[in-house]
Image (cartoon, rainbow, N blue to C red; front, side, top):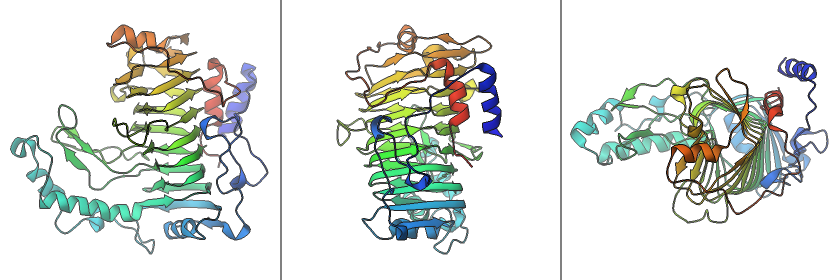
Length: 423
């Protein structure tokens, strides 16, 4: 219904849109490769060369883990059907947070021990914090699934619920999957995180950790509607971390045609301000994605040369919104033809946030604010008018691996029509 409805709208509006450069090569969806001009991840082939014996169809966590571990070094395709639950045991029997908890841990005891009113602004330590860490490790052993090199995972009406895919290999494709509610049963209290402290959780839906040549395409990411949490120590008990994080020197990645929605911390590119393994890497293209009801990090960037183009940003609740583009240490964001729909109460200067970066290139932006018609907005100028220090315009590079951009006015229809899994 979604495709037919939007196709009708396009016809009424007289729109003719060019398809994205990442196209199918053959009729088997598991053997589709990234297009030659699809940004930094261009040419990623994943498991397209898999032999028939290295093509698997799975519907349980145990089957997914076995398929990914099979025939090390060989290209593989893994088709996923139905819902795979991450919070299960080795026999795929459901497990709750209580099942993962170490005998020495309980949340009431943790809250009593590390209340800032008595513990102070000091990081938790001692047997209870160690028990929390062991509890978290118990859960991680089940919910984190590693993805090695030369692998394609493709969804056939698939949902990965409460599970983290951790991509550590070279040449990986993730397509047509729905990721939902990767939640941490045992968040850690950090009284030194910000002025008032924060609860920090451990799991993302997808982590790219030192991964190279990765294509993340036509997926859906969200909390699965499970974001209502209590407040402890004056801060939300945050059980969700990111939706898609690209860290630890990951490189040559394209994130295209995904739906990322109803979440706070969304996409982190680079996880440390220290110039370690990230310098010269974290080259990422982010295009034709829907960021809807996203609080922040869409994306937040450190170090990388990141091309952000033809994305649609939709904000309805200003109270849940912080910013979209995060300009971090030595980041080089090249933003083009992005469309923002925001409430009139959101200042234009708030669409960008300073995280110790110094430059931002942003052109072709259109903003629909409240009931007003879309209008061109100079994002760096709006940011600089409201903040100090100013951001400079010269990011030192120009994207060359993209041969076509949709005009910004066409982005909403193009993204709403094409982004997300096709079921």
